[in-house]
Length: 443
Image 1 (cartoon, rainbow, N blue to C red):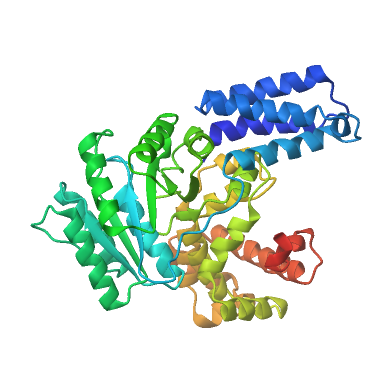
Image 2 (image 1 turned 135 degrees about the horizontal axis):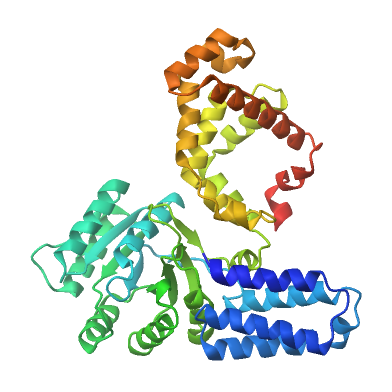
């Protein structure tokens, strides 16, 4: 996400932080580098121009230029303006006081709209709601089949009418069914086109007027760069959109769409699709995205992901076990499964201060699979008490897991070190303990 832009912006930030005094000439050079970085990231030229002008005006303020740490203050200005460009504050998904809430997804063909419908349904279900998916892309049988497959994999119902082309009738019937089945959300997947055309727009306008959706969400392929702005503007002028969701943000190394579309259209970005799995949908937090771009990390998003994987009682029980030095290899195996679901590479990218070499390194899932194989090859007694692992036992485990004795030795040493470090963190004896505070401490 934003790899190229992030690299260039972080180089500028490093220079600023290391400068005790900044002259007007140095500031202009820094702004030139920022401008080039944004333009190379395919950010809209007008957006870049306004962004640079705002930073320059604030950075040349007397309080900044005469302060003892002008570099740090300018970094803060850049971060604040970047956050504003991305939307300023979070915007939650609308929820009607008189359910069901109807969300109408619109967008071009190939933008990832149908997949996002499934991801959005999965998201609202995790929030405790009861969604219904509706197949209104009646011109592509494959789209209907895809939505049904997504619904089946999630255990979420899908309403469709195989022989009907009347999207208004289909949507109305779906909403009626949702009322009967007490569905909280109705998520309508509409037809896309290869380009914006009058036929597509007229159908969407007619559907909007007949069903009166609570929110019309435009799904935008972030890899299209500045073209995303043109698409968003066209949809807003013809149909009227309320919000946006960005797809393929994980594969877009530039980030031009995300940095331009909110600023130009004024519409809030609510979600970002960051992977192929159905739980790879993140709430779009402008301040967190800005921090990621500038290399300041995003610990809050890591916490959010972790909270999705842990029940409160489970987390409290695990903490007690760690404090008592009772964290066993069975516990370790469970945590590996959770880490695999969260995504280790994604977590590294959101941690502050992680070297670029480590962030860019290919994470070998085979290593995690090897650890799981090693633990699975142990007896219950060995997993609960690794101290009994003598030479003969380690040799047997190596043979059972398809590894070498040296691999077993290395793993046990890593496990012991990790157990020691986790206990120190919880007891406040490790500098990483600052990350272990109450959630509100990060706010």
